[in-house]
Structure formats: C-alpha cells, structure tokens
Length: 388
Image (cartoon, rainbow, N blue to C red; front, side, top):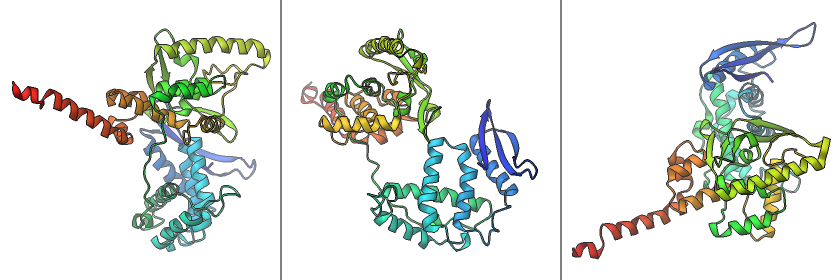
C-alpha cells in the first residue's frame, strides 16, 4: 500500500510511503494530519504520493495507462472500504489494464475508450471459464467508466494529461431497476420457507426493518433494546479475502434507530434463549461474538453464503428472482403501498433524503397517485359536495 487515509477524532490524517531503508529493507513512511474532510485528505495524499513517489514510475511522456492506473489504485484505495477497494482493483487489473494499459497516457483517445466499452458489452466477461467471452452488462461497463473517469480526472489534476478523454465518451445507459420484491401477502410463505434454518432470523429482521445485508449480519445484542422495542444500526459486517471486517454503515444517515413490531421483539427474545442453549451445547468451542445473527457455534454468517442459500431456498419455494437484498426493497414497497409517509420510510432505510426514497421506489408512485386522486374526488370535487 502506498498510502492511506485515517480519521483521528474529528480530523483526518494521511500516511504514505516515501521509499525503502537501504539497510533494514523496511518501508519509510511519512504522516500528515489536520485535514478537515476526507476528500481534502485524499487529495493531499494523491499530491504527496505524486511528489514523493515518482521514482520507479516513468516520466509523464513515457507513462502508460497501466502505469498510471496501478499508481492511482495505490493512492486512492487507502481511503476506501475493503470491499470497494477490492472491486476497484478487479476492474482495473482484470479489465481496464488488459484493454487499455499498453497505451501511452498522452496517446489515449476517446475512440480507444469507446471501442473498449463496445467490445466489453459484446464479449467482456472474464470471471469464470463458463462465462468467458460473454458480454458484460451495460450497468457493469458503466461502472468501469466511472472508475476510469475518476482515475483520469486525478491524472489531469496532477498535470499528467491536459484533459480527460472520458469526458468525450458516452458510457452505456441502463435501467436503474429495483430488485424483485415480495408482497405483504407473501411474507408468511417466505418466512415458512426459511423457518428452522440459520436464514430465519436474518430474513425476519430484513423484512421488519429494511436493513441492508451487512447491517443485519453486523447487528449485536448490544444494539438491541428489547424493552424499548428498537434496534440501532451502527455497523456493517463484510467478508473480504476470507476475513470478516466490521465497519461503519454505508453513510452517516445509515446510522439509525428502528422501531420493531411487537411480534418481532417476541421472536428475538426466543432467539436469545436459543443462542444460550447453543452456547451450552458447544462449550469451549463457542465463539463469543455478541451477534444477533450467527452460526450455532457463535461464529459470523458469511454474507455471500447467506445470499446464495437464500436465493436457492426462494427458487425452490416458487419465488424466482428474489434476492436477500430484495427484502430491503420489499420492506419499503410494502410500507409505501400502505400509505406510510415517505419520510418515515426513508428514515427506516437510512436514506440521505426522502427524494432518494421516492426516486428509488417510483414504481410505487402510480398507485399512490391513484389514491390521491380518489381522495380529491371524494373530499373536494364529489357530486354530493357540488349539490350542497
């Protein structure tokens, strides 16, 4: 790692490599602190690395796209979550460098980028033997565009290129579709399908709160107030490179308290007793994680394994295309369909604004508009009212 950004109290600091000790072989690092925002720290880190780390990197005239992308990853990924950094590296190493890495930075043209997007949609899959040669989705290629655009924007700021060729390229368009959802009438069937498996409690919480997968799996008993009937979302469980990582939720608005239905509180009380029985049965092998959702030995649940298992169970139960993430959207859709105020739905989901909630669930709006029109007809414009 060439550098990283860390929050210390209310400010941010950066740490970056400046070379290797010729005697000990250890990395030599420098640190600067006192940055007010994360963005300010990231920009400073990029500048400091560029100023101190040009050794080993070709001059701007000779630098290839591959040279820059790898250096940009070292500068940029230190301030990202492990899962996001992993995704960026996969896009860069598996797709962008093989396609564009041989080109000199100064020779990279919009045509090269547009041509890559076309070919990627035709035959860009490389993740497995069975899918190689299959086209990438427009959504995936658009993500490649965002990563490349960000990297080249940083190169322009540092004076390595005079303009960003991505600005003159049209990324693929795609529908921002919401995952398939279940209706309120299907909730009992879904719960019956997972009852008796480790899926039951995570599914129950997701349906009752709209929490994200990592938020559900990162929930601890210390976050649960059974007397008050609330849970507080304050952490997110990830699994990166076979290691479990607990980090803060997606955004500041994602830290929130959610009121639970009384029936869910009752289920959680029973689950707490059940976990104590597991602990007695396992004995010294028990892993004391304080997690609400766990394996029977106290260990965390692998998020990807949970998703795959849930999708398989749903398909066998006749719910084609329902993912675990779809439970979050089901929660929101059901509430909006019941005329719960969008502000309240937004707060439960941890959205930054009500506008984001309504934009995401615009497919529910037509039904709500029909009800508004009916109310207006009844209260303001009815024939009976005119007769008076």
